[in-house]
Image (cartoon, rainbow, N blue to C red; front, side):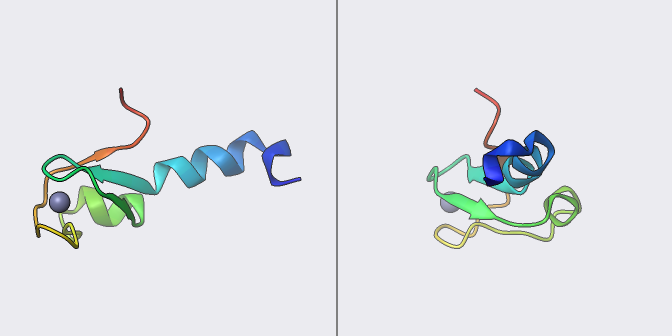
Length: 54
Ligand SMILES: [Zn+2]
């Protein structure tokens, strides 16, 4: 029933980012990523993009 709430899903997507270098997914709070405090676990890159963007 979680999919019944579009807001919750949007929030879930908002907190998932993709590394631009190695394309691994990273789940982190949006604000932390914007503040540059989140690094990719695999390649330590800070170049992350929201998963929604295509
Ligand atoms: Zn990476």
